[in-house]
Length: 631
Image 1 (cartoon, rainbow, N blue to C red):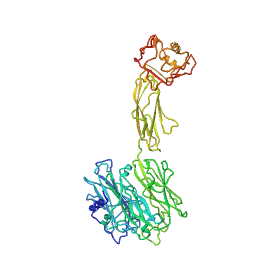
Image 2 (tube, rainbow, N blue to C red):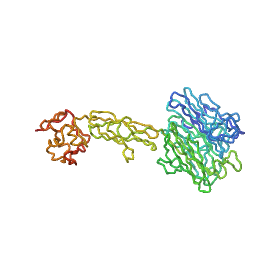
Image 3 (tube, rainbow, N blue to C red):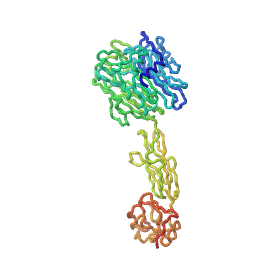
């Protein structure tokens, strides 16, 4: 939707210009409206929640705690925004219904800017049809800008035509943006917006400014596009202060539109850009790369240079703002936008340079896209603003009070996903081995959250003799499954499964391999001795040695796979073996190629020789022996 069509749609549905009262001193400073499905997993539900973040002039007579005449001072207090000069705040849902109830829950109070910030959530259930344009109208803006004491209109498009349309984009930014004459002519700040459909859909967002027709309908003055522009792809606003060094006097009020180009829903945010007349250089603010991220130890002067920070539910995240002022007699402090639920800033300590850390452990179910923005200022924000000469509200800012442009961390909080198996490389890989042969399989699983190590276990009891243990010294946390199936496992075929579990978040996944054990009438593997082989065939090592005259001694070289080891004639019922010269020649199954080289065996005690077949595996299956050797 083009900006002109967007404006036409708003005006044609609204058909309203909010009347301004020349006698009313304005109270509205900032606002952003958005919506989302109240039950996003229920595609048949048409209940939505509208969210309005707003900032008001603290000193205005209508801004009091509900049921009292007291000014708000603490988060959680409720303000009921009533009408002024007969103009109630009205939220029109776009379907012919509206409400004048507009309660604001206090989020924070900022005396230095004569400002209180709060949030309003209003539920509404739509019938069939749509889309709808929901509009919030009220009166009136604060003094000092080109639309002082004029009406306010915020709008958002609600579209419930498909299940994946779960909400509009939303904006979370500093309610006051200050630019400085002492800075470069063109200064930049971000309109920090996120997609309701998740971080992966961030590239589908598009930014624009309301066109002149929107302001004309409200009898307001549109911002000069030679002064303020916004990049449609990034949301970065460019503000040219050169005019304010000569003829321009008023601050600039701008309404920005953030649209999801995939769902066509959009939200709006109303911002006043204040021009600081102080020509001192003032502080500089930096974003510091948080621990356990690729940006650790780096400092970024512009949020467009810092990649989005990836965090995880139930894991702490630390974000540090730093600031310096070339005038080291100045003491620096910080202010932030509305922090996510559970996030806290460390104790306020003025210094130069100055640091402030936000600590946040997102709760389970809080995955999503967030911005934490901050400014640095060279005045204690807890002090009361006193202007000279007195001005109400206290803008222009207090003497020698300089603020930086807002700078934001972009944070993508992810749910704790189960680990992913990377070894074995193939899902349901198959292994066929012989009895008494050693099977080794490397098992490895990875977790995107490096703070949540993966532990690999077996969900059921492993076969007798099998083991699963981490490989010591392996930096990739690889485990080794090891098993030598005994003779009684011949013919066994079954899945052996492994479970990878995140050690802290306790979510898991499983992977299995298929293992089959050949049934052998007789088998030899590394570690068996000549005496053990003789016992299997009811003989003894002396008799076996005697039947193999080519072996000079137990220490003789045995050509594995070439020199037959002959058995006594009375113990060959297991296969078709020549009774005159019984042998172990037959069909040989090998897991690995048998080396065609002599293998020396190191045991010379002839009463108990330890003749071992190393590096090979021989399996003779019943009934499949080769033809006997010639006499």
